[in-house]
Length: 269
Image (cartoon, rainbow, N blue to C red; front, side, top):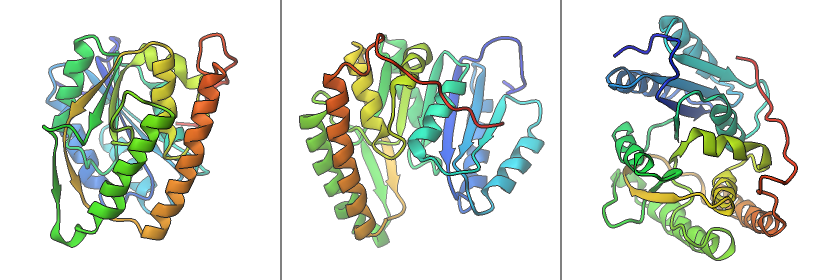
């Protein structure tokens, strides 16, 4: 199968948000293109660059030139808006019946997408990776054992708080692999406001408020890097604030079809 452009709508859209990704981007793009090219269905690839200041734009330009004519789109921002904003723009640009976004470093190998697609084909409106399901597995380097505290243990605490405050039915809101029926998620985008790492909670709360079916999927994933404890602590405080905001907006009916929305901001291709 080829990624060559065609008049037919693609079966699926793979969205990769990236920022200052020069350390892994070449490998990511090669793996993504290979995976997409081997699919039986027609897919498109959308890479959204959140104003990278390293060599990321040059790598993306070279990739786009090498694959000119393929179903590949590159969206670049001049100013950083946050991962949530980048994902929303990617979802808004998606043409496929199904839309999948995953972290740009492919911490969730692309082979996990088949499990997500199976749930969507079974009738789910959204299928999200869940790292705490019994069948989920992870790979961690010995040098990153402390990551189990700063991101895994503390992440579990955040998810427990998320269930109490905003999304009681979901066990893992922050895993970086999620899939959607494009029509369902696209109609919600104008009602979302969070641009940072809490955007997942807002998106999922909005879907739940609209009666969407959200399935959690076991995944294989890896821990490759660790932020500083201070940075993680600051992010946690911001995310707690965002949880309260999401719950408040939900109680006010801000995610309903009748609520006032806003136009999705488009960056130039």
